[in-house]
Image (cartoon, rainbow, N blue to C red; front, side):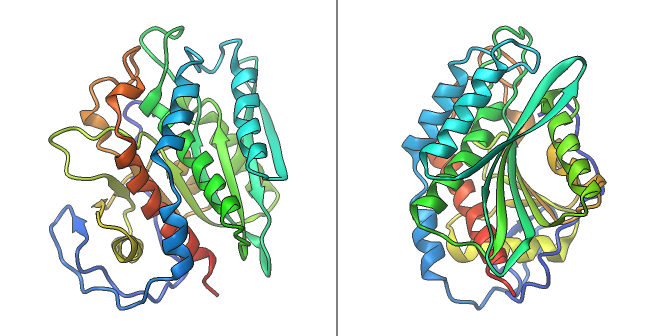
Length: 312
């Protein structure tokens, strides 16, 4: 994640989702809204149970083993090929590259698409950046920042293909380039989508989701729209054991790109990043991380994604 890049101006309004408010969500002001009354969807329950700690660990290990994923390093095409191969191995047929140029380098976002059904013209974006940075750019393993987020994007695609899921809306799983240099991959992608007048209904961004410090209760969910965020947390509490801490302001660099392109419905999942002592250092490695913790965050996110996708 780019240092210091937590912006005000984001919103989450989950298209009028009639779920009710959350009885157990945690907010910065310790408010306690009323609880949801909806029943669990058996498919969503089964799908989130398929998210695998071992799969996540294997992806993070492979990504950190590139040594560095610094945006200008010569291994960047090998990283792109590795990500493509993961999506293809799950049976995702539509895997494409969105290319752009930055400071004289060719950069590529990897986009895996599950085509939608009756609402296919509407899109849900699930994204996380794959580049990394460090005090030594040749030693930038970036396990939490942001192999963890990239692993999350890949794993959710695997689970939905495994489950044979046919989405109503088109789902795009995007591993983004050059976030550490100013969210360049998401900016290029979001601006291109706006130029094409694409109908993106929700963006879910993962950035640093696998470190659980001893002092940290749970992960953060960013959105300045209190009622919309509580609707999301209501879904999360229906399906998972752990509520996020709502942060009613701010967002991450990549979801900010979509916001500034006019796509205002965003969710930003992250751990308490400012307490991670190994960020942007050669010590940002898998042995500092907790895949069980990451799995819980991904279960929460997938419950929200599937609930929104099945809405009218």
